[in-house]
Image (cartoon, rainbow, N blue to C red; front, side, top):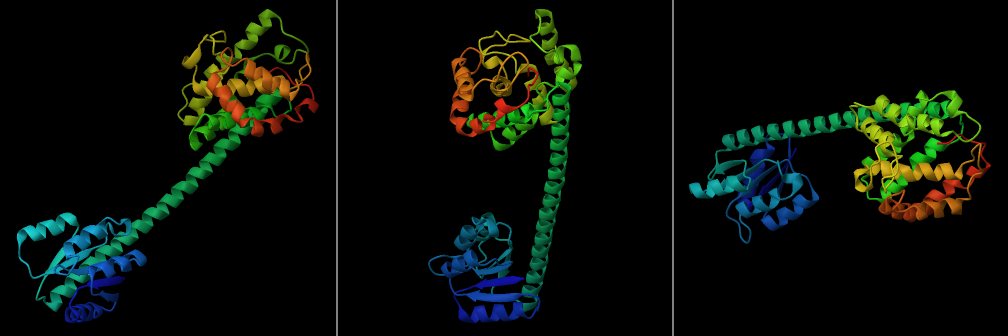
Length: 350
């Protein structure tokens, strides 16, 4: 343990330091002024300070007040040494952060007892702080483990949805990546963007409730089949409803709203404008972009530039104009994801 004694009297410094050093379990440093002591404390961490009240330029109370403003010394025990019995002075010293008092002339046995007790308090503080840091590390590790497992389950499930949908491409991963990029462009916090990245792959989870005859039909769907296909939103909501985690709740929101349109012409609820959840507005752009750039049984994949122009053209009708602006800003990062898509095998409608 490191102890600092601050006193403008050399004789007092020597006496106090000598008595404290006799305890044998601490290193003692001395200082003749509060100004020098402040510099020492800035460069080194002490575990206990003994500070004289009467000193030139900066007295003991002012020194304690200044030191307590520094985070490393917020809880370090400080003994103020004074011959002044003024109760107001003592109350003021306590208010600014003095832990204990020692009267001059001091009794060396009393001095050692107070120092010993406060060093024990400091050791307890340090042990508790280390224990808290250790627990925080353990919690972080456990949380990371849970998050890794959660991500693994999401990606395996989304991959299963792709195969159920009759595709083997990277549709869900592209939708997830584009969604995260747009979210970042919209100013999402890092954690919220990460959750959207994991929620987006579940946007079409309800398709597991649609028959193979419709999902894998080699051609355009009839109107009745379109209506049946649209029920995948309802099925997705049922699968994801009532989730307890932020991820599942966001996935439910995305599944329910990514087919809504800014002008209210979408489905299933014909929501318009800001009534559509932001996450749904973002995933809508990512989902349509990937559908345009992907080969379908009834169409060729669009050229990348044409798909980009189409997203911009639908700003204010299909898509939220603000999300489209974020999409434009992130286009240099998005475009490379689709450069080879047109060479992929045919894929079912997203």
